[in-house]
Image (cartoon, rainbow, N blue to C red; front, side, top):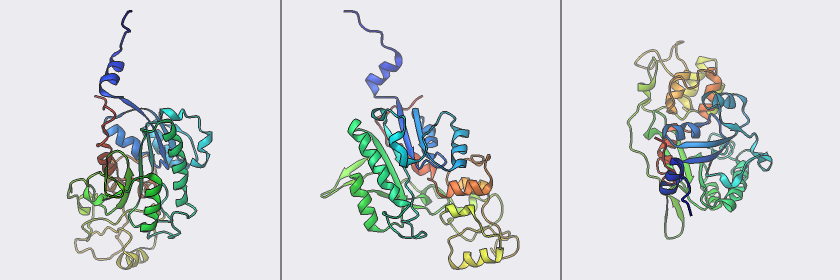
Length: 312
């Protein structure tokens, strides 16, 4: 019997594991997951994006025109996808009902309960491909009860990582994944180590001006709707402290020149290049960046994937 002709790709797949992966990104936002996979040289065959915000889709397609938009996650059963071929599913389900800055309605709140739609979809894929990789993210200020509910639904407890280790911003988040886990006496836990501190400070990422903070407060989706009254901005800065202000003097004293973060600085806080959001207005970029993932953190987590070879 003659030996079949084996292509170079087949050879690599056979001896070193699969090279390409098919990905679904739920609540895709500005597409941080695709950018992280690309930066790490993972070869993606098909990338399906579930997103409904028009300018998020616009930015994703600008950078990655081959991304397949599938629409609202509530309609996932209607999507034209060969589910058994899905290798990776990412989810950043809404945090508004979980965050200390939100309504505190909990995981069963109107927005954050979309997490359970993700679980339905994940379980459907796992029946066809038990080896599917998943990554779920949510806010660090979530109630412990809600974290427990989410962890039991996923079958793994999260790791807690603050983006301050790799950026100039405080951004405390939970990450659940089966990329790397370990067993404790009672549970399975995510075993991704915290990245080393890069010692990046707020002042160092400013295009001009000064700050009196070592690290920026976590940018939020509400950055899209900044207050125009500078006196009110300053009062909020000195009382609530949940916003970031830039001063034109080293003493960081209030005057009419006080300003909010510009688009370049917002991109830098999330680990993106200065021009990443150039096609968007400052406020639209702020909405996506404030509601998104920190790129260096996602790259750190994905770097522990060993079931797919990176493309040279």
